[in-house]
Image 1 (spheres, helix red, strand yellow):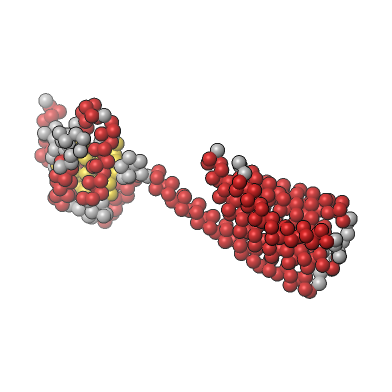
Image 2 (cartoon, rainbow, N blue to C red):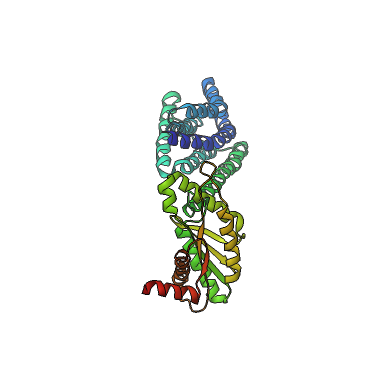
Length: 358
């Protein structure tokens, strides 16, 4: 219900400005159409109410209603009803009538699409019948020059006001879409790229290295004995450790490095234009920084990282092979004592072969 109310209030605020502008300057067009036909005084009083009081009253009604969206749609229906009344009261003077009814139809289409447009049409028809019942049917087929001039502000200013509202709405929708796209690519706990987003970038970087024969290195990072941390101290502390690593990654890597959470306690980094040796220096620094972390409530807790590195080389057929090499290097680091950085080199491959043989 709170979500519906929020949407309704936003809708009412969007309608408020076009209604104030449209009703205000629309009074001039209606006045020009009414003046020659000598309508009773209550019609003029209703015109003043509709033009200058109704927009603010409608806003108060919708914003204070339990369901603002539904209340605002009823207000739009009343707008159309008034439009039909003025068309009949002006005795269907061609230009003022078309101006008023067309602007209201435009507003209904912009606010609620075809459904509201149709409802508005029947409301206008109801307004015509009500005015005929009170004033009697009559028709005026001639529009004077000063009536043409009186309709110009409505024809110029109201579409501008409505267009500005639609433009602002389009900007907000673009911003929301951009924010949702960012959220869909971000891991909620760490604020880093999620698994899918990072792998998409890995494919792009692999293609760039392949086409331009440029350097690039990837790193897979694993928190040593993370399951033991969760089992001994709980998942809340485990999440704190994950968050700490994400902070260290953000603060100790270069601006162009692309960091993501690969899954569980495993993180991943793409280091563009970076040799294997340069990447090793960066990761050694990260490993050292993270090892100094101390939790204020559990000072005896010690953390460390195992890191596997793989540099791009022409022998890689695709991004998956590149990732497999980094994973093999990580496996070598974990199985040779942990808390170290290993690279996808002949030595690590030989170590893995020995492990498999044993």
